[in-house]
Image (cartoon, rainbow, N blue to C red; front, side):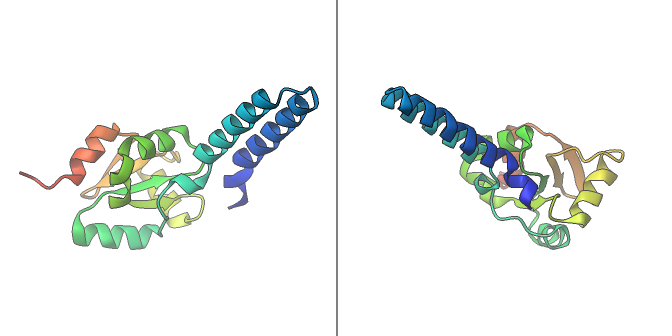
Length: 145
């Protein structure tokens, strides 16, 4: 769990150091802007932007009942962040499994990707899809017309 927070913590520390230096030079406005930019980057790279993760077995069980996709992800993955941000509010309709917290989820991803832990891997109706287009995932959430 700690490694998920390394990048966000480094961004906060770097932003704080840069803001402190700019403040000592009397450039308060620039210091505030730099600090806000680093805090925004820390927020985007943190696990906080993702819906609450559940275990792979539970996600697969729930998906079998209601047909909603399962997303295997890991903190710090830019493609996972892209998928999460582009899905917007509909991201909460999916089941999210953090492969760094769930060894069963990591094994499922390796099985789907020739031994690699390539994320995001989205499982729809039992079929894995590696790094799918967010629009395609959103379409899988819509009930058939």
